[in-house]
Image (cartoon, rainbow, N blue to C red; front, side, top):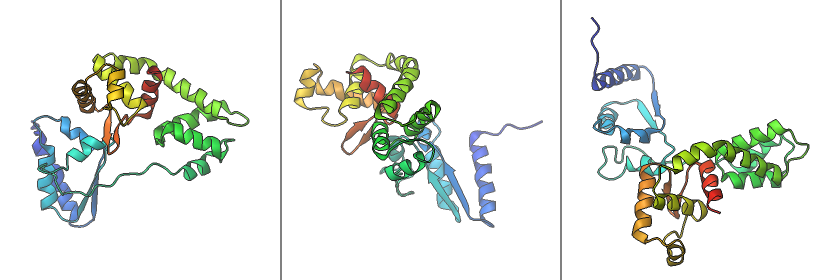
Length: 239
């Protein structure tokens, strides 16, 4: 008969094995999309990790995530992992590097590559999609119109799934998403609130709901939509 281990027992076994390995080798553990532990409910994985991080030597950890706001909250004051890690943001690829790579495979000029970079907002995934679309087309010389045309194809391909997502939002959340796509900052200006006939408290509640659903994120200057394709789609439907 094979006994079924609980989650805690499996984790204890895992960290015991890591501890034994660390006696002979330097260990590095990388956990991607780490912010997802916030949705595990009663499982306090962050507290569990703190215990083992404190107890084990010769082992380093990388906590990676695409949701900056949620990821940072796991290391804030009074959180179990407070002061257990050093924050480091990965900067977007440099335009010069994107152009150096792109012009090896495509007939693209630096100004057009800069336009592609600006339209992608430096998001690697979006730039990859556009460059792939341009590569399939194989134009003799890529123009800004070609870039816009590929972006439009990408938005059309995502339209159905984004509309299904959009329909799950309340009217105030739909408005908040569109405003963030267009403005990012200055959302609570009197002129903007009056223009869209919405109260500050209502807009803030809608933004909080979008944050909870991880559809938007927060930065020092305001709010933004981390999925650049969704951001361009929301901007398009708000025109």
